[in-house]
Length: 204
Image 1 (cartoon, rainbow, N blue to C red):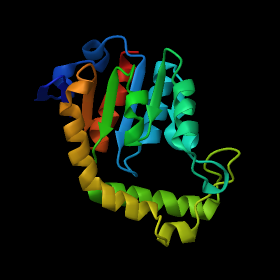
Image 2 (image 1 turned 90 degrees about the horizontal axis):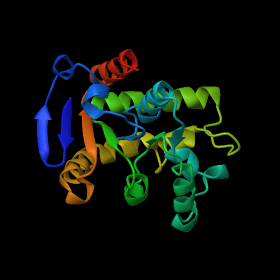
Image 3 (image 1 turned 45 degrees about the horizontal axis):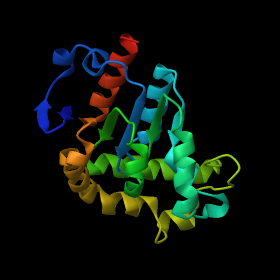
């Protein structure tokens, strides 16, 4: 696990940390980022439940019925409204939304898992959704299809194409003075992610 606060970087273990809640104090607003397939929504949902805070999924705010995409004039106010409360956990990337979603955030958790793992996860997730035909977000009618899995908008291809560039992007973001007020945690494996959640739960 890598922790970055302001321009200070250090690699620490959970044995050394003892408690993430002791390290970060009274956390109420958290953002979870990472390449598609890293498990952002699952992680964020579990953390939100532990914090007794709303879980906000950017994809749910973004996608309309039949995969329609909103303009930023429509999308951005939705985010502002969703984040108007004092406590929340939001997951999703959408780099252009950072000035909004990080205006009051206290902690950003980056799930930076290996490429092979994200590809495995995003593929098995897509296949499961195709077979069950589960509606992804209530009221949208949006479902995974074979055409979307193998088409130009394939989520598997998107995960592959953006994995390396996301690493560069988020490493630069962590060093950006505009975000000096934010603490970043970079979790590099599912084991580290699980340790974080277990530690949080143990001290909640």
